[in-house]
Each structure stands twice: as C-alpha cells, then as structure tokens.
Image (tube, rainbow, N blue to C red; front, side):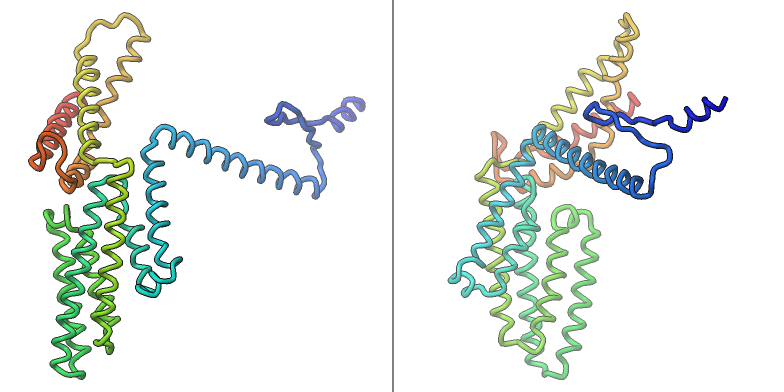
Length: 326
C-alpha cells in the first residue's frame, strides 16, 4: 500500500503537442512554471488564430477574385488622388480642400459599376445643390443685415434639413437618392456654418469643394469602368439564372422524384431540396442589384430599355415556388 502511494505521488501527466512530441506536466508545478505555461498557451492560441484568419482570407480571395480586384482598384484610386498632396503645384492650387477628393474616393468607390455611378452622381448633385442654396441664403443674409444672419441661417438649416430628411422616407427617393439627400444635408450644414462671418470666401470654398468632389468621382468612375469592370446587371442576370437552375431543375425535380433506391440517395435528395431556402432571402439582393443596374450605361441588345423589372418579377415567381416547396 505504501509503495502504491509513492508511485501515485511521482506519476507524470503528459500532453501531446501539435508537432507530435509530448510534454510532461507535473501535478504540482511551481508558480513560475504555471505562469510560463499560461503565457505559452496564450501565444500559441494567438498564433493559431492569426494563421486561421490568413487561411480564410486566402480562401476568400481564391474563391472570389472579383473582391481582390476591387480592393486593388480602390488602392489605385487612392494613390492617384493622393497626388494632390504629394505634388506641390496641385496642392497649392487646391490647398486643404484637396482632402475632399480623398474622402470622396473612399465613400463612393463601390464593388460594381452601377453602385459607383449611383454614389458618385448622388454626391455631385447633393453637393452642388447644397452649395448653391447656401450661397443664395448668404446673399439674402447680406441684404438683410448682420443682426439677422444667425436667425436666417438657423431657420434655413432647420427647414431644409427637416424637409430633406423626411424625403428619405419616401420609397422612390430612398431607393435611388437616399445617399444624395444625406450629402445635401451634410454639405448645406457645413457650408452654412463655415461661411458664417466669411461671406467673401464662401464662393471660393464652395467651388473648391465641388471641383475636388468632381475630380474624385470622375476618377472612381473611370477606374471602375476601364479596369476589370464588375457590372451589376451581369451579376443580377447570373443570380437569376443560378437561382432558376437550382430551384426549378434540382429542387422541383427532386421534389416530384419518387425513384429513391437507397438511404444514401435519400440524403443526397434532401440536400438538393434544401437549396430552395436561399431563394426565400434573395429579394433584397435582387432589388439592390436591379437598382444599381439602372445606373449603368446601355449595354447588350436591349440598350437603355433593358427589362430589369422583369428580372424582379421572375425572382418573385421563384420565391412563390420556393414557398410552396417549404
């Protein structure tokens, strides 16, 4: 009995490492040893998480190369627009307002051509309209007198911001001009506040911002249309075609198929039948892609009369079919 107690007292616990080796762990280790083991485990866990992250990123880039191309195009656009700061003649011409060109590239460069054109035109129109109204209101203020300037500016900001924000709840405006309405409110408020007491510099400041935004949006549109363009219309067509194939050929065919010879065949059929569930949640994606496709230039045999609404009707019919299967 005493010998067994002595043997249990010196028994070692061993753990197998990732490289195949084993490490002995004493049941009663010192404080320094336990701290070292905890630190080592923390470091190994962090290294493993970083490796898993890079592996997933590599798989994503390999499976969807269009996303990698989009990232490279954004980097190219930012590099070109940064020349306004790196080159002294351009910087002296634009000054600190050149930062608006960089901000414009960041916020309007989207994955597809239609989305980029939509964001760019909305930003240009919102900025131009807000700047023009701000200049007009400052002219009215200059005719009314300095004592009325804060009251007129405050009332104009309140009325226009409230009206434009309310327009964003209208479905037709929200679908196509939601971003432009937001830019209008932002630009009008900034120009009104920045031009308070400096009416003589207001026109110059507004012109510089409009010019830099036009430069940034033009650069984004050219790069996204010339270098490996990703068309929203083509993506919508491929989405509808893929959904049609998965639903009507595979799911519906398997649904009415009674020739099941084995349990493995049953499992395979059940997996195919589950493909209809992706159709039930595709409405938002289809509407977004159709909206961006309308902003793209006329392509294909339909030209500007492309039947994007018919694609949405086909998607609605397929969802109705998927509801029946469900």
